[in-house]
Length: 427
Ligand SMILES: [Zn+2]
Image (cartoon, rainbow, N blue to C red; front, top):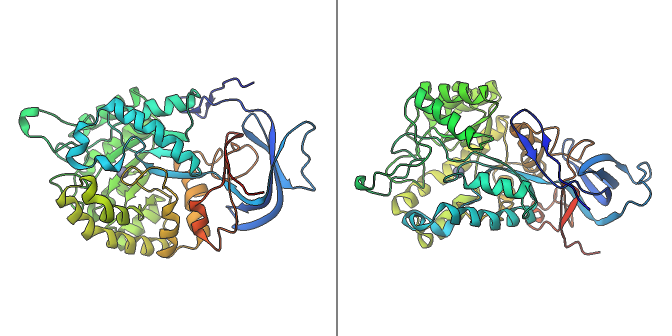
C-alpha cells in the first residue's frame, strides 16, 4: 500500500509528490562510490519511504526483519543518472517545418512516452530546459502524481529569448503574427517574463543568450541577449529562488552569461581560454552536449532539419568537442547534459562514451552525470550519490563500467524512490 507525500526543499520547489515506498534493500555485488571513484564490493543499501537509511558492507549493515532484499550480487550499482539538458516533449523526426504541425497537447503526450524511456535508460532525474507552452510542467506534474513512470524533473517551460532569436519561432511569415511564448526584449520585459514562467510552474529559467543551430536565420556565434538583459534575468530569477541555464554557443555570449551570474552554460561550443578562466573563477557549470552532433549529421536531413542548420552543425560540432576537451583539461566544472529531443529521448547514455573519447576517464563522465549534476541542480543532498538521506534511486549494470563505459548504455536495473521500475539482471 502506498500513500503520497510531497517533499519540499524550499518554499517554492517541491522535489515531487512521489509514492511513499515500502521499506526495502538491495544487495550489490559491486557498488561504485561516485565521489571517490572507488569500486566497493558486497554492499547493502537499505531504504524506507523511498530514502536511503543505511549503506555499507553486507557484514556491517543489518537489514531490518521482514524487509525484502533485491539480489544484485551479479550487478554493479550506481546512483541513478542525471541529464541536465533535455527536451522531453520533443521528438527529432519533427524537425524544421514538420514541427509546425505538432500541437502543444501532442508534445505533452510525446513527453509521457519519453519520460518512461528516459527512466528505463537509468536517468532518474532530469532538468528539462525548453518546452512549448508548459508541456514539460504537465509531464512533471503527472509523474509527481504517480500517473505514469518518469524521472524526477526540474522544468523551465518556455525558454526566454529575443525577437527573431534562437528561442523564437522564425519559420512563419509576418502575416501569421506569431512569436514564441518566451520572447521578451529589454531588461524589464525579460524580468516580467521570468515572473510569468515561474507563475506557471517553472523550477528553473532557460534563456537563449546566443544564436543557435536548429533555428532559422541566426548564427550560433552571434550574441542575442545583451549583458544588461542577462543581468536582469539573473537578478529576477535568483530573487525568486530559480537557477538560470543559458544556451550559449558564441564566445562573447558565454562570457556575458558568466559575468551576469548565470548558473550553467549550455552547449559552450565556441568557448575560448578567457571563457574557461571566467567559468572557473565564477564556479559556473559548463554543459557540453557532445553526442548529438553524430545524430544530427546522420539523420538530420531525413528528419526535416533545415539545410542552413545542417551547415551550422557541420561547422560547430567538431569545435565543440575540441573545446570540451580543453575545458575539461583546464579543470572547469562540468555537468552531463545531452540535448535529448534533438536525438531520441532514451538514448541519453550514449554521451558517456563520447566524453571518454574526448578526454575524460569513465569516472569523470559518471561524476558529471551524478554528483556534479546534482550540485548544479541544487539537489546535492538528495540525488547523485548513494548516501544516507538521499533518494533510493539506484541503477545497475553487469560488468565494470570503469573499464567499459559503453555498459552504461545497457542499464539492467533501475530503481526510483525505492520502487523497482526495471529488472533485467541475469542471475
Ligand atoms: Zn536544448
